[in-house]
Figure 1 (cartoon, rainbow, N blue to C red):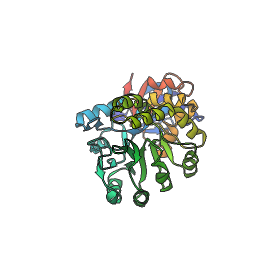
Figure 2 (figure 1 turned 120 degrees about the vertical axis):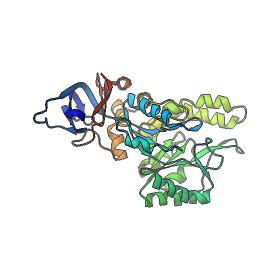
Figure 3 (figure 1 turned 180 degrees about the horizontal axis):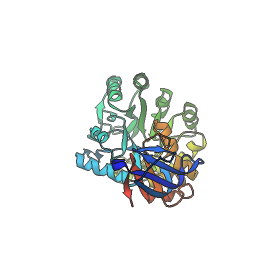
Figure 4 (figure 1 turned 45 degrees about the horizontal axis):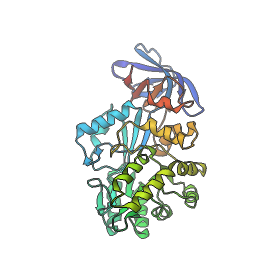
Amino acid sequence: MSGGEVLHVTGRVLVGPEEIRDDLWVIDGRISYDRPVGARDVRTVSGWALPGLVDAHCHVGLDAHGAVPRDVAEKQALTDREAGTLLIRDAGSPSDTRWIDDRDDLPKIIRAGRHIARTRRYIRNYAHEIEPEDLVAYVAQEARRGDGWVKLVGDWIDRDLGDLAACWPRGAVEAAIAEAHRLGARVTAHCFATDSLPDLVEAGIDCVEHATGLTEDLIPLFASRGVAIVPTLVNIATFPGLADGGESRYPRWAAHMRRLYDARYDTVRAAYDAGVPVYVGTDAGGALAHGLVAGEVGELVTAGIPPVEALSAASWAARRWLGRPGLDEGAPADLVVYDADPRADVRVLGAPRWVVLNGRVVEGG
């Protein structure tokens, strides 16, 4: 830390759901469980410490109309930081946010490149809009540009059909996912409906965003293949309003969206009960505000996921899944401190007492 300051975090350090330590030290921005010898300038913060929270579906640099200027993206990242989100998987964006990597006061980002969608089958200005014969090439491009992830749009409204429909033929997704894996990238896909899911999962996809179309027949397939879901329930809450807005033109689609909304909690709980990995993501940065991670954890609890497991989906388990450290010896000191035990009541997440990023106290006091 600058000026030789050492940070001492005392109270309850939640290294894992059941692994608790009495304190940790931050020296030169990194975690140590050994008291430093001869430390003179020590700052102490106290409470219940967690690894920095994870939003596994977030879009920094994006709003409802497309890419945003750098100053707006900075405000989005700062809003997430204030909420305790210190690790973001950016699930698709047309913005170049690499400049954030040079800022030690902003959350760390794992990028999935730009969305890849079928022509005229996604939100304008968001995605590469292409046809199936070009899918492999674009997946390869985004695999090289991203941080180990690629994002497909698996389904969207088909205006001729008047309802959600799969965007890609089976052969195209098989070849594309194989190419991403060859290049060392994992693949995720936006999917609201059911029809796109069997082909994507059987082709080897690693994750599905939203996954509102999961059915009793498909859940065992997800579980057996280890395909994760990021339900984004705070985003699914917008479905009734979307349905109301589109009902006059697309009544079939509107009814479908309402059914998906009505079943959302049962769908997530059934997936969790079957052993499907579930992680926290908000879908912030499109039409949704940033800083909603605590609300999404609460939504998972409402769906019936045990509080400690919902908390883990935004902390310990999420970091392991994304290959990033938690409160490990020698790891970057990215942590959030609360006044009470978030395992007992996840609503505590909505009021961080201290936020520490790269060893510096950036929020709280």
